[in-house]
Length: 215
Image (cartoon, rainbow, N blue to C red; front, side, top):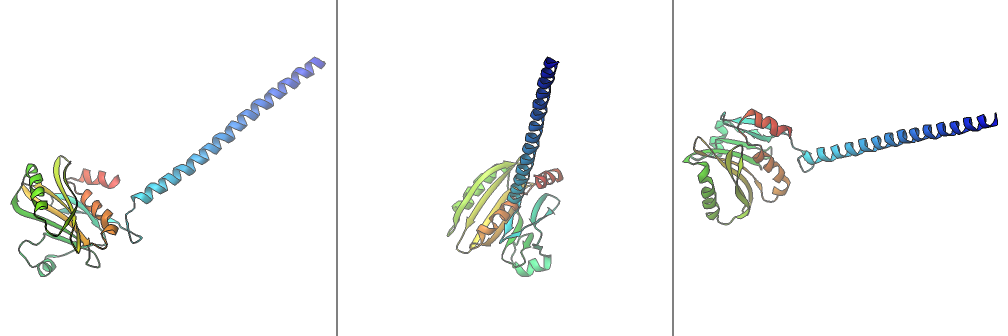
């Protein structure tokens, strides 16, 4: 009888140890899951914050425009697209931009221009080099040629005494297209991400703009 009690006691101890082991694992797993969830949430918050573009603490949202049924462009949704009459009165010259988007303060602008100048993708690098060589009184921040959507783009970012310019050049139907963002040189660091967002959004079909906007 005593031996039977000892055996039952040992079995009881084993059962208690096994149950305690599983309970400890369950508690540990739940704790790890809780920590992982908190870490995932923090990571999502960091990524969301990094994705936000702000100017002076105000988040900038973008609106997609289709330009001449040829390409897409994201522009801050607070910018106003000038009508033809305003374009003529404000930019009274022959080579005025086809499209101008203006901030509420009229201190930041997006220009879209298509010239009659013949241009091919292969000629963009030479065009950019000549453009840079002809600059006077300006500081080139960045310039170069890159490929995107099976097309060649030329990039030129520069400043003069008063203005910051962020420009892209590409071709459509063998004609030169220029997209330019400009603002005061005193505030360009605040607007630099906005300018890059506008330039990076240039694409040529709806699938590209949807993919870009979801990245």
